[in-house]
Image (cartoon, rainbow, N blue to C red):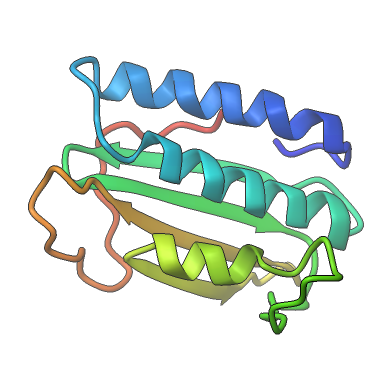
Length: 140
């Protein structure tokens, strides 16, 4: 669960790091990228929605899928780069990091943002659209 409290983003990052270390005990090259995506998506829930969100991570040797569901019908909108605005670059970063990024409306009126981050040390093949590896499904 992503509570509507900005102080909880650090807790979610720590839970995601622990999860990835358990899934990849020999290490993996994409932990920092996943943690950045988790931070950006969780911060968007805290700053731009009315309620809590939900974080799900799915990981295997090829990469990790990050899913964040929230109650807002409004989809993420990229902002033009600005040196004077402290926010607005999250979606641009996520699109640069993610191998696949999509937003799916939820039947309850919200949405799910899904980002797949490939492990750069693994085979760089992209997962099929809508496919997520099954091992390691967890909600931190």
